[in-house]
Length: 92
Image (cartoon, rainbow, N blue to C red; front, side, top):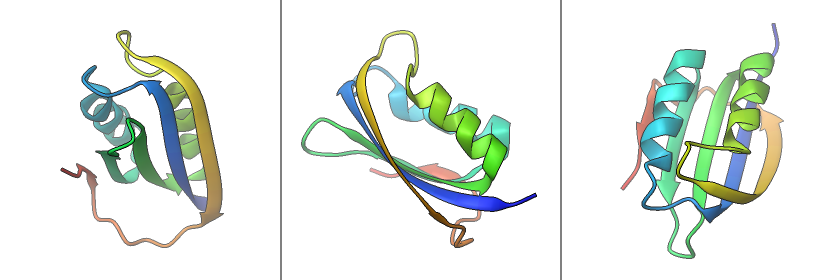
């Protein structure tokens, strides 16, 4: 199976609604590695690395997010798998 990296920017009501913690739970469930963090401009940034089908499933989840989120846009840059992460973590 082929591995990929996705750098993602999620816009909308995505801070203060447990987006990061739910993203981490879903990423770990899918066996992905990477990180997620809030940005000062109100967006959430995430990096996902793993099997292509699992990354694509994660991207689909990001388009909706947790129940209290209101996602208006998801910007994705797919790239070459780098293998820099050992787990999936929330950055502060």
